[in-house]
Length: 267
Image 1 (tube, rainbow, N blue to C red):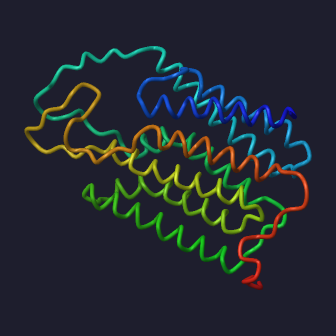
Image 2 (cartoon, one colour; image 1 turned 60 degrees about the vertical axis):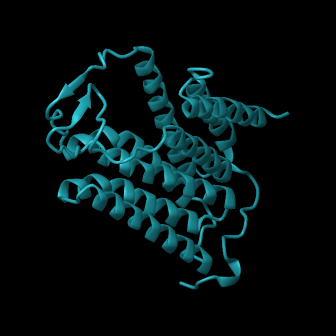
Image 3 (cartoon, rainbow, N blue to C red; image 1 turned 180 degrees about the horizontal axis):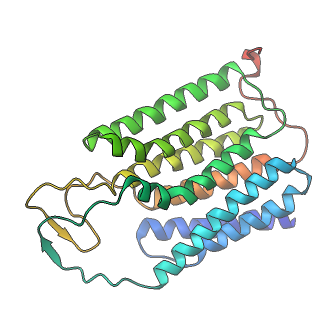
């Protein structure tokens, strides 16, 4: 077995353990997520020696940011919680400003952006009819989902501003998927787009809907917020998407034909 294959097996094993721990709210191995990102970074370092510089640098930077975010989450979880868990009757604490929400989500969205750029920077990418269809349908789905999320929470300029960056990033990811010359990288870009789209609801939930006379708990709003995605969903999308992008972008050999070669659109 090659070293590359060993790193990918480690990504699969540790990634599965991490997602399973998130799914059942009981970590099988607390450091599994960090180990999965470390193994994926190791694969990128070894496999990227023959890749174009732009592809390798953007991919490595995106993976590094995701690994550091995973390490930060692990450190935060190991510190425990100081919430007492008692109920409070009355208005909730004020919502954070939109710029504060965007600042908190900026590192994660930057990592997704770098992965999408790595897919776009692959040599041999071109526009095809089926690629255009994939990009158009994906962009419409992303925009429609964001509109529904904002509308279900009452709309407003602040909610639109909070939802816009993640939505635009999801659109960019599906556009990159439509132009990718490698199906594996294209699939990874789609997963990264879905991961970015899951951040729309997460960000919007921080702008609290606060009717009068509702019970709240310390650190957790019981009523007034939209449904949040299970933490296992973005964890699985992140790892699977990043791994697929890395494998697809760093494969050696002649690139595969772009999606929809028979329906190629001339420029």
